Length: 96
Image (tube, rainbow, N blue to C red; front, top):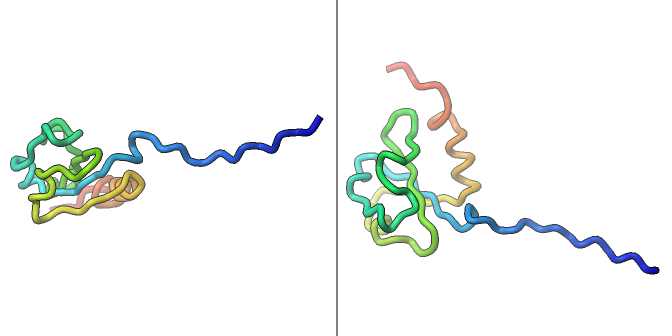
């Protein structure tokens, strides 16, 4: 009996792979239409230690509420994990 070759296991896409993460200024949170986002409100955003940036997320095409913002950075799930584990988001707060 001939053995079957092992099937190569590749990365299976999860919901996280289809999400897009956007870092915005917290001053812009009040401008967003949360009905277009996976983030449900300004209060549920992840914020950096200084409190001046927040992360919102969506799936699919860029919603108009994000497109209209002039200051934003767009990230994949893998990229946002690196960012939130950096000093600006998870490190020790700076003395003021």
